[in-house]
Image (tube, rainbow, N blue to C red; front, side, top):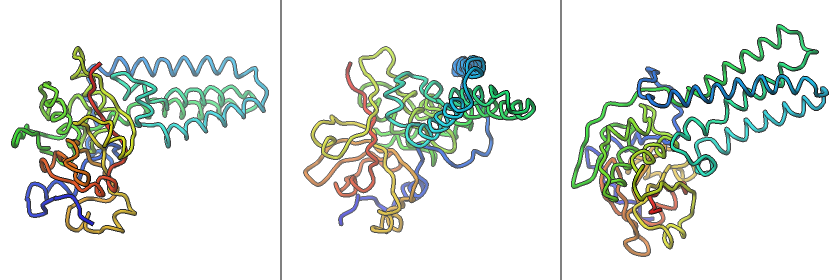
Length: 318
C-alpha cells in the first residue's frame, strides 16, 4: 500500500525518526533530579499530606471491621490500583476526570490508593505489630515514590530550530514540545521548544500526555482557548475535527510485521510513540501532517489508520 512520503535520504529525518519520542516514558533516566518542578512542589506536598490523612482515618475506622470485610476492602483497593495502572494512568479519560493544569500530580491516584491499603493492612490487630509496621512503612514509602517517579528526570538540551515557519525538534525526545509550539503558533500564541520542554515536564525519556496537557494549559491561560484531550476515530477526524490537532502515533507489532517498510525505509521504531500535527485532509485518501522531526509531509489515509492511536489534543474556543 502507499505509505507516508517520508524521505529516508534526508539526514535530519534519518537521524531523528528511528528514536521517536514517547508520550509514556518507560526507559530509566540516567540522572534523576527535580530541578524543573518549581511550582509543583506545593501540590506534591498537598497530595502527600492528603495521603497521610487518609492513612490515619482508614486505620481508625477499619479497625472496627470484621476480618472478612477488611479483606474485601483490601482486595477492592488492590483491584483499583491495578485498574488505575492499566486503564486510567496518563490517559485522555484521566484528564477528563481531573481537567486541571497539574493533573500530572492530582491525577496520580497511586499515593491515595496506597495510603488506603496501608491503613487497611495496619488495622489488623491479629497481625504482629512488627509486620504491620514493615508493611505500612513500605506502602507509605511507595506513596512518595509513586508520586515523584513520573516527575523525575532532566530536560534534554534543546535549541529553537525554526524551518519554513515550523518548529523542528532538536532532541530525540522532544516531539511533544515541538509539536505544541506549532499548535500554539497556529492560534497566535508564541512559544519555544525550550519553554515547552520545561512546561510539559519533558525529560530525556519523553513527555507524558499529562505533561503535554499541562504545558498547553499554562500557555493558553487567560486566552479564549481551551485544551481538549480525547480519543476518537478516523471518521470523526475526517468529519468533525477542525485542524490543527496533535495526534499520538505509534507503530505496533502487528503493523510492523505486516508492513516492514515502516521500519526499514521510513525509520519507525516499533512500540515507540510519536506526536504529529494534523493539518487536514488534502483529498479522500491523503492527509497533510506536520512531523516535528521532519516538517510537513503527505500521509496516505491507510498509514494514518495504521499508526494513529486515536488520541487527539486540540485547542478549541471557549
